[in-house]
Image 1 (cartoon, helix red, strand yellow):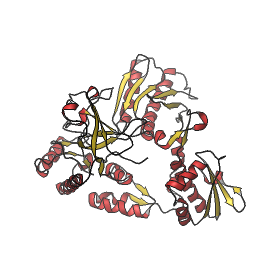
Image 2: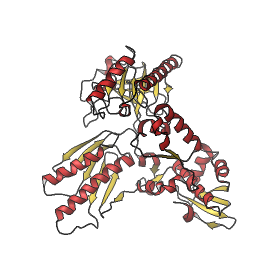
Image 3: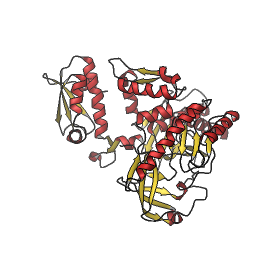
Image 4: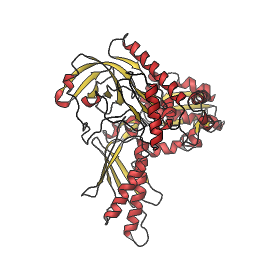
Length: 480
């Protein structure tokens, strides 16, 4: 799926719904975007987390808890408006957008329509927060917008802040100039690539190393870091081994685990994760872990381990919305509190906003997690036609990426020269229409003779590798 979060569009209001305090805006995508009244005005908070601009505090129904303006007093059908995507389209819903546009940088988030200077709550020192706030008040031209200082700007020299702010101001001027030349709906600014965004938002001195297997990308990352944080350059490593990066770090097996409903834990317990349209249910079981004498201690240990694993799985699977966790029943309130506190402590690492409620009368823990994009299973798989929509299969583009990595394993083995790839006709059609150069690229990078053949007997999310001219099936040898 093409990423749209962070993109800035000039759109046209298609409908205003006062009863919902919302409007639908045509931004040129398949479905109209949803704009809530609370996203028309500047947020109340001075400070924010370091992942972007402030958003309204929302109740469990997803609406703002503070007073929002009457939407029909600010928007009318046919009106032109500049908006930014904050959530990807999910299921039948279109994108979520805000009129509070922001331009993120490594150290600052610039907001043209805001007026306040905020500092990340994760900067604990009051003196440092005051220094950064004062410095930005001097740097931001009067009437030109507001800024949020991100966590990585702690103890940063003012010259770097000034340089980044200047770049962001120039970027906004280019966006305004483009708006004057286009007719809505139109894209005004595209968010950085996935790699650039990861480096900008996540790569800091808390990361031991970053491994890259593309020399071109390696050079681009080092060039960017020399400009913004030279101390991190040496942490970027170029993977030169003949073994693929995914195999060297056993990433392939980890990816497959994320699509399984059952997650086993080291002590023998396990959790079952099931995603539905309305919510995500998680069930905790002791499994083969029975402890020794005290059942309450056995249950507590399993639940504590499950709380840590649930927090990890929610991040890895990018699960959002309402989540209900059925921990194993415990007798004492103190132990129930320990479980909730353990879950909350491990969710602190999550960049998505989360909220965990106390154990309910039914013994369930309810929580919510910010949903910015479809979950991993929704974005990488589709309904299975063979089981009437009760199961999921990998999408053709995911199968092709898996095939790419498998062919590199074949090349590294140096025993094969000719390979026939048998795959489902739907995947073959995808390659023909969407990635016509795939085979030529594989031949060029692996020096293998590759032939593709569609085969309706092959499952839609699988493929078979056949060594030629012997006709020997080598799938099990090279496909992880």
